Image 1 (tube, one colour):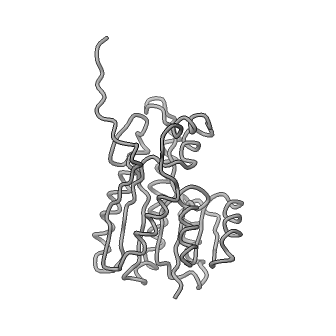
Image 2 (cartoon, rainbow, N blue to C red):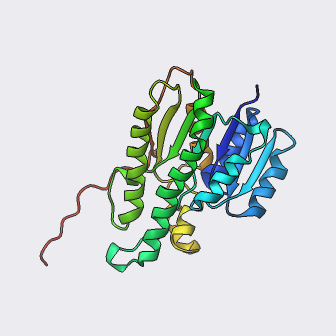
Image 3 (cartoon, one colour):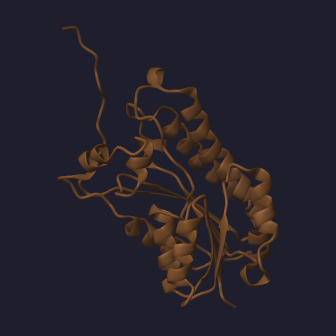
Length: 253
């Protein structure tokens, strides 16, 4: 039986790279995202190799998520692997300078969106049982604080704890849960965070060696294809050239 993977945020970055990696291995793909033109472009690229079903979807919309899952064609159900990749960071400024709207957007996407999709797909994953996987995309920001992370880091801390709690609740079903927490990776992440500031994005990644979206997609595929009796609870990945910043001390002049 052909295996099916459901990927949120498939229009760029880790999600798009994951779609390509799973397609290489012959998996059927359910690809969701808010940018239909990018979904259709990816469908055109991959559909000559594997079955592809695309859904224009905002994971913040609970009703739309349920409808998308309920309407999955039979060929793509049950879903064996869910990759909760949709998410974003906004407002790199200190908390006291940030618009409340940006905080709400991160919470609605990174937290509510993730639980909307997970809840809708749990019956399918439990039906598969042994070997099924939920892969949640967290971040090193969920464990290691830094200036400007405020709500973004807090949402990724939620991803980590939610993943652990799901493991407990799903004990005995065979369904695995993994939080993959990447560090610096060169994607559209900084462009989104700075609302299109290409110079800021270039400055972050220039003169160093960040990870690529393909690096993270490879780890997603590895986790999803482990023997059914194995579960990686938490996988934190950084480029060799990135380490922790240490404590910051305020001093008198």
